[in-house]
Amino acid sequence: MKVKFLEEVDIREKTVFIRVDFNVPLDKNLNITDDSRIRAVMPTINHCLDEHAKIILASHLGRPKGPDPKTSLAPVARRLGRFLQKPVKFAPDCIGPEVQKMKAELQPGDVLLLENLRFHPGEEKNDPEFARQLMEGVDVYVNDAFAVGHRAHASVHAVVQFAPLAVAGFLLRDEIHYFHKAMEDPARPLVALIGGAKISSKLTALLNLLQHVDKLIVGGAMANTFIKAMGYSVGKSLVDDNLLDTAKELMTTAIAKKIKFYLPVDCVVATSLDGRAESRIVPIQEVPEDWLIADIGPATITLFNEALQDAKTVIWNGPMGAFEIDAFSRGTLAMVHYVANSFALTIVGGGDTDVAIHSAGEANKFSYISTGGGAFLELLEGKKLPGIQVLEEWYAQHPEVG
Image (cartoon, rainbow, N blue to C red; front, side, top):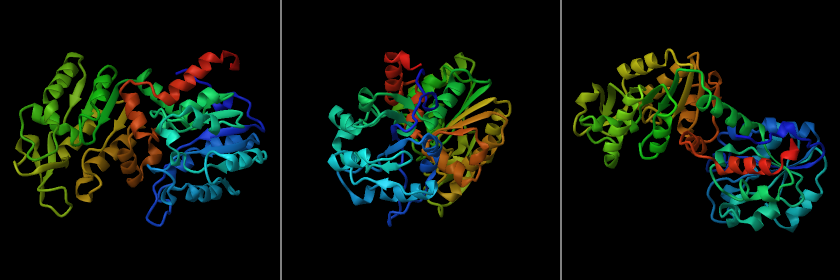
């Protein structure tokens, strides 16, 4: 991935437009409940402040169908101001005469946050005219929003054709660096730990991983399809019945490629996905017909831990069970602990996995936690992300930049 990075270009006292991901969770009183996405782009913002740049920040929040106070970025402006310990100007819109006036009045060191990009349908339609207006008065475009890198939206894709200079920010740089390190030039053994609900949502990723990994560990509800494909009953557990043959083919391919393929050997079963429901631990071969698999069991935790012992690189996407319910969180939290304390380069992608790691208090022990669930998954699938590809194309067309 050949792109130009922020630290490689001169931005001193220039107007810098940074596409960030401030899609933070809000409670019913519109208070931010997790500001990690704001903190993630602070190095990029601080670098621009050190260079006395005039900073314009743009993001979406939620999925509004037009202007909606419940998805305004106003709470983000307040939190960002607290982090920067300086006032953050907040625009009432992201385009238009008033916004253009606010851009023109920016002084070196000023920070302006635009209102929610998705208040305009042109954002998700990748509308060139909307993109052109976003770039009015801008000297440098910076993409630091990996989480939306898989979306061909105006502020990620179409804007680049109107940008005098287009580069990747520090967060996007790190995402590119760590993913390349894991998939293109990994220290081996390379182990992928894949969980989550459905095999259908990660089928392409699994197929691509078989071209790279030395070991593949599958847990979570996704494992149910593989277990059923082996001829065992999984009771009333979630299963992709139309992909049973595909699951068999994946296992056959893994064996043919001499990839070590691991599935649960025991599990926590329950009468329902309710923390108060009756539950017990059984071997995979003994799942009761009217019960469902809710988590991996203790023998599986031990097996998976053993499989990780010699790993030099670990990629993890997806929880091992219904971890959001305390009674079924043990498997995921145990794997958090084992991966965190391994001696491998550990890279995590996927919102649910991120939540589990932070709830376990082990986040600082991982080499890198990706900020993008969908974008990370598309990279695992071997796809090119529109947001990164357009930066590559811009750089290819402007080799004189360096």
